[in-house]
Image (cartoon, rainbow, N blue to C red):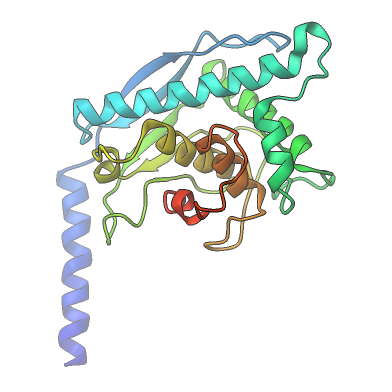
Amino acid sequence: MDIIIVLLLIFLILAIILRDIFNPVTYTRFALPLPQPPGQPSLPPFIYFDIDTRFTPTEASRIKTIIVGVLAQWNLHLTQKWNGGLNNGVSSWAACANMYAFNRLKPIWQIAPVPNGLTALNEAMDLFTQRFIENGFGGIVGKIHYHIPTPVTSSTIRGQTAFRRNNVSLSITVNPAQIDRADISNGALEGSLVHAWLHRVGYTHPPNMYTTYFSGEAPMCYMRGFLSKNPAVPDSFYTQLFD
């Protein structure tokens, strides 16, 4: 019986290898305009992504809409922080993160401590800025990978944690089955993307633990429209879309 199981596993592995050889994954590139918030260094006019061609046109369109939504909130944060040139403002996003984020406030590669959630949000958005510059000017194009997990709702948008500060893509893995769901709002999917991108700039959390951790609380703030938590709505309502 053990030999049969081993042979079946070998057959499965060979089948996957042969599938990838004869049916290689293909990608197509698209560009999105990058907002130009005040007080920033020279920014590229566009950022670029290579998307798996297995996504349907409708799925690809929704993924683009989700990215554009996150870019708009990044732009709003920096505009509010710039405060007309004083550069002393507190954005709605940073104020919310300051209320709830207390743990793992810095990227895994960073040595210097971060005092609070407000500072953490400011630094995270600056890291997003760096990623956009690396993408648009440096050619570090993000890939949008296609993956349907088992069980099918166990993943939405996933980003692997980056262990260095520089030259990291904004690549993510997207579950098309979740993108197809009309009962998940664009705002909820944008929060899932924020969580994935926070991993791409180095923020972490313990497995399946998000409450009080910056990489969980910052996207939850986003998904609530930066409002305070409602005791009637558990964090799991939001974190079910995190990976």
